[in-house]
Image (cartoon, rainbow, N blue to C red):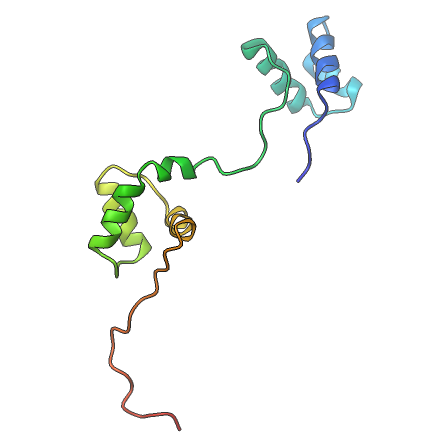
Length: 127
């Protein structure tokens, strides 16, 4: 994953824009994308910050972990349900989650969701 551009470069771009250059001219002068210069200057105007925001990482699991008790209780009520069925039951209770986020939730909690044998074994044995 690429790293964020240096704070020094960001400061020079924002200073050039504040000195009267347009955002696109400053971007071309310093060899960066116009969208980057626009975002940097906008963030500087709104927050007064030039430093990059955190990159990567998981931003949604905290929202799901806050509902862990409800998720686990719903799962215990219907242990043989599919993830999409569990997702639908949770949405009825006001918890928005995708099937993939539920899968990661169960992996974090080391809960395996293997289905039991619901059909009889075949009459014909191994040949």
